[in-house]
Length: 279
Image 1 (cartoon, helix red, strand yellow):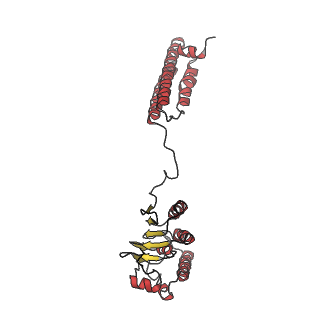
Image 2 (cartoon, rainbow, N blue to C red; image 1 turned 90 degrees about the vertical axis):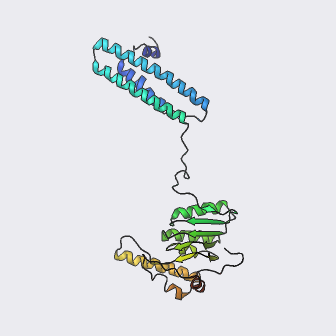
Image 3 (cartoon, rainbow, N blue to C red; image 1 turned 45 degrees about the vertical axis):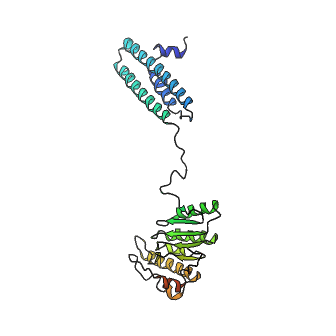
């Protein structure tokens, strides 16, 4: 009995076996080979794959012609033709994929939809921008673990998730950090701001307060909103804010915003005076 490789080359293998196993099956297995990082190895694999394709196509085509001569089976003849075209297309796609190089490694960083928080030149200040969510807190924790020099969190946000702001307060307090606002800090953002050991406001900085809101209000949710506001009101009181200021804290409707002036914020204990070494 002749070797199966020789049998296929001369078209002596059964046509169905040649199509399903020697042609399509083997070509699909070759397609699973991942491109190596080495150029020499890549070209070697491409050469082997191309040589194999010639063997596959030639043997299958010879087998198809033999089968048609012996049985007059036009359907199988056409099936072989379509299978050969498919194998060539698969080979071309795999070759292009190999030449393009190995796929990029998927990491948590590669899946990010926004950049990491920025830091100033001396790595003492982290800039947190945009609507607050739990990714901000995760990013902050990662930076604090790798940079012992961080002393200040600068916030620039129109709000975001109340619970995410509270998560930030835990780490700002844990690491005894200062907070600073150079531009604006509204809605949920002041919750995180209040965690600062020293809380400072830049020359053009603004803090804004208003009522919390859920998209679809139900009686129980309205009660829940008031409860959450009261929880944060108590937190502000613990951080040294005057009761008189807290009476006005949530008077503005959600679509409005109350931005007290610097004197009122200082008198209420929301912000601290900027010293010669301050922000």
